Length: 451
Image (cartoon, rainbow, N blue to C red; front, side, top):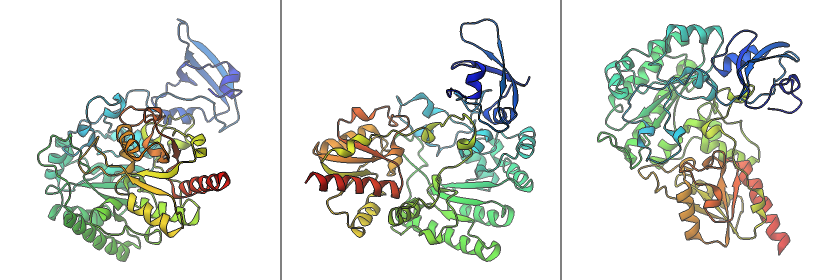
């Protein structure tokens, strides 16, 4: 609840349950946003501990924010995923983590709001009508393979064989769609991947982007057919994707298909530079993250605001998961210990090079191995509190550790530990090149001033 907002002035209070707005009960925050756009609202609420409902007349400017914060983006239950993909990372999580991390959704509304990927196996004609009528664009679709038999097998859902018909329908309606292909070695790579990319070019050329990403595999996977990519397999995938990207440039004037930075790093290759990128629409899927970080570090300007979906622009939409509010610990910057950047194994060489090229002597980079998940998990965003605690204990308490904020969600690591559980001097820094450089400059100034 925002103080002195239209809702607050009308008498609505924190914990009131909204039952209807102008006689209509919204099923999700998208409908809620549409209903509150007017200047006169008739709002029915149920106040905790009261039997009778309350009615409030809210006067506001057209388009003005109502001033409420909503607990959930979906009011009629999340449409959970009924696929059982062998490569699904949720099945690879250990027990004992936060319950919300085990929720598996396949809801087109969350695709629109948050950039979550949907397989469309639970998509319906009614959903298509709503997407078109309300212009719910862009959406994010998991393709994985266009071979119907293999797609059904990979999703372990017979509807997977035919659900890409909805992708065609969305594109025919002019909906902006971003696709992804998670490549599993020995399953949907090789000739299957060639067919998928052929079909993207010939059957779905209206796609805005397609990202080709490697399988993420933890030590908790119980799937015998799942394994990590070998470097030569990653290199072959990069070469294949690059071939189709060049073909798309010739045919459509744009690259369309992109291999994620992780494939390049697995292959020992340099990811694309900022000049080779057309957009950061697939940044959360790892396409262009290295270039965006390097560019913003070098120029001290962010290339673009990273983030998928429209959750930020919807009044009161809760920022779930990795999009939740990050934790900041600015006071730690005043600690005079040796600055040390904590990061995952993939990013460590990049940071070491950037520090060297830009003259940041006296700053260390600590590559933190992910023992919590194990497997081929080497990205900074999946570092846990236990791994950070282990690394800082080995590094010593005489250091000032800089931690990227994407490791935390509302002050919690993925394993449920809090920052204070690490027991080290840690400054949490927004995950961008410009933010890191500003933090380093402030730290170096403090060190110079103290000396």
